[in-house]
Length: 139
Length: 289
Image (cartoon, rainbow over all chains, first blue to last red; front, side):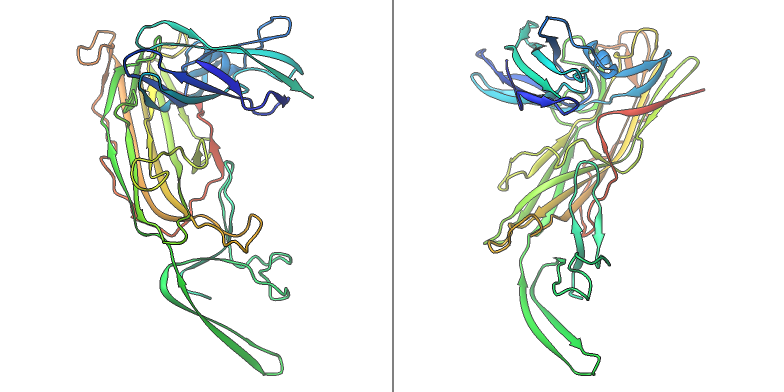
């Protein structure tokens, strides 16, 4: 799994989209879920230059725990229905996916951030890590 | 006024899609009689159309001119669909638990949309899809009441414009799909989902936009026009029995209240899709007793 950014430098508050390349390095075809809405199949790790994890938004706290609703004062205030598609990847093939991270993380502080994604291989159950990329949030 | 449909403009974005009706009574739009220009979008298709332009001066004198057009466009445009049943499955994403959905794991897909059309020779243009949600509701019920979740406003654009598509037939972007679902085991700790139901009504539009004439520059040369649409709906209702269900490997079972569309048929439309908000994957919820 390799990732790259649509834009290496973004203005704070703007959309941050991570492009994901998923390659089947096994000898058998596999199916992978590409979500359009609902919790994405990725665990996202973002840290600033000092290695401190970026703050999660309420949506990010829910999604990174695999939850589909947000609670406030013990009550459900928002729900995230799922939709997406299963994509078949033959051995050696690479498919594209993407995930918006600005809605899950508070990236309003200017600075440099390191981003890395993880997802579980549905066949082997191995937790697969992507490469790490660097992004600058400018004023 | 020519036959067919005449519109002043249609420039959809993710936030809104609104047809501007002709004429716009505002100087600078090329749609008022005080301007030396006239701009409108003519949505029509015919082997021969006769347009006559005439005027009468205040003196009583006038004149007219006539021209014949052959207006090409896609013919035989249609949408066919294939739907899956509503089921409960154990998600194949590790740690995601039970999922209630129409094509809940995406294979087969919940609903597959296929477009067919004969595109005009010489100007094939491009087809695309627009998916609007007319209603979208989710209810979580437990022993003391529950939560009702819904759209802020409708109709709402379903996340992206144009809607995701790919090619399976002879035309680029001729296929699209949706697999709506609800994660049943993803409620936060302390919130027991005794019953979860979801239902929505949606309309998928098949659009076409001709390639602009080479002499036309700028972004206002063509607009996309609707060819066909299909209304469809999904419902799902599941209760947590707290006991393993042999047919799906979860503790959830369907209540039997599922009345989703079965292979709905498309119909020809000339009405542009309109919306005032984008559904970004999020429903607002209120507590109900």
